[in-house]
Image (cartoon, rainbow, N blue to C red):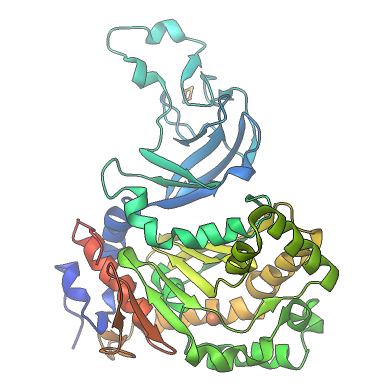
Length: 433
Ligand code: FES
Ligand SMILES: [Fe+2]
């Protein structure tokens, strides 16, 4: 029997399964953009990308071009990359310094907070029909700089930043706290991938403890036996414990929070550094925070955090993946690596090597996953069954405080949690589940 025509999206999600239309129906995708991505808090960039007044980066919030720019008063502004005159994009470069911003089309000039400074033909616009705001660039409705991580929301309304992200913000705190100076900065260079799969496939995959022994069997084998030389990077040079990592996933704890956030607890992988560098680093941390706090920071047990709907953060590895939905079957994935200010340089090098080994275009681990997303996307077009199952662990989720849950091993709790948030966003009123 063919899939029923999409009528009410809320009927596409049940407690232990979802209808395949959530991955393949362009109408569902359009509604997701409107209800989820245009209303939630999205990552724009890191403030270290714009250290000086006038520095900017350009990016996209979902499909809308925006500029993140530092103003003279040191505040960071997120502006739509659109001229108020006739709509041209004002910044055409990925990054740079623009003091002032000048539209390439007819030369209107704007301050770094978006206020119009002058136009060649300003007098023509100085009429009663044109208001001041008509002449300024438009600021993205809401933005927050959280410890250097700039988030924005395309909607004026909706849950506030703390309410929505509060329970998962300790993941960002743990990354930043690992710096002896309490600050991180982006290491220049971002890995970017576009994969032929729905955005939710990436998010589900990142905390899917059941897939590595199968889809990553070849990479695990290569890592175990040190056969990655031909890829110019050796996983065993970068990490401790890679050999057994896959075997311990079944014991890992998974935890979820309202609004779709979750974490997968530690697996026995940690980055290799020399003893001298480790000693120097710990001393610097202890000098800043004392030994108890240093211990707490370094023993934080999470392997992966999901900040729904688009961020996958590995605080201890200083790596962050951010997804951007492009089409129902197309997703852009950006990979960022952070420097811990005040830590020995070796820490930067090993974090870069880790990101290269796990998330670069040459990484066989990432490629395993990207190929799988394309594979699933195509499998879901068959009329074999309308349902995708997330039954593993159903009934065993353990309720915690304030809407949190935990489970163990191969539970599909994070996926069920994501779809619980999905339902709430799609209903038009996300209030936490
Ligand atoms: S479109 Fe920008 S000045 Fe005309
Ligand atoms: Fe994977």
